Length: 261
Image 1: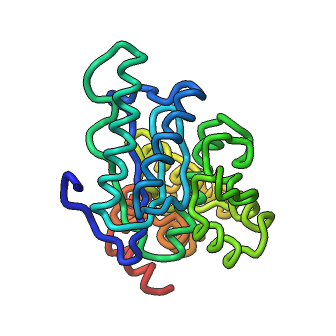
Image 2: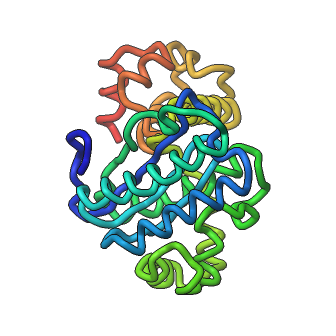
Image 3: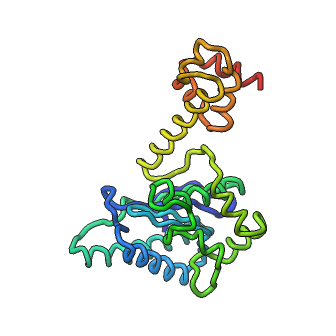
């Protein structure tokens, strides 16, 4: 059963993530990552839930799951319960291994579905563990190139979606090199890093395209103001309040600028 009320996905798709207690690296070794995968594989075999993508990092895991929330709750309980018990035994410890209950965010559109898949596959690259998504051994990325029903963890339905969307693996790989600036649900420190990256990238854009030393320059320099505000809202996905805070512009001025788009 799900331990708390969660938002329901109209598509029955969820971005699920969980991390180690106290930010501990509970997947520090390859052996531990492989064992978590085995726990998940076993739970999937006894469940109606389908795994569409995954990535296991040193202290957290990302999954994209298809199914009813109640079934997903049971799947996660079985997976993390078995992993936690075994982890405690080998590390001579007691108590919780995971930080509270798993988190979940509904995936309610096809666009967001693909964006989340790209985001979780890019996790090891952004953490500087590998130079490209296909080099990481503990994500689902390479399973899309060489799916094997007896070895692959992801469901064949996910592979079919990739083929329908991209046509071939090369196009899927190229999609993973594209950049976007949505803020994805993750553990707290990763979300802070996402936010810092978005702001830094927007600052560079202001300098390169409009010669501004800072986004604060928009408060007195009208050159490129409307275009930059539009970029901050539509490309970088900042809220009006965030734009006001970054630029020093009043809410009225930002809204009026956006109304002229």
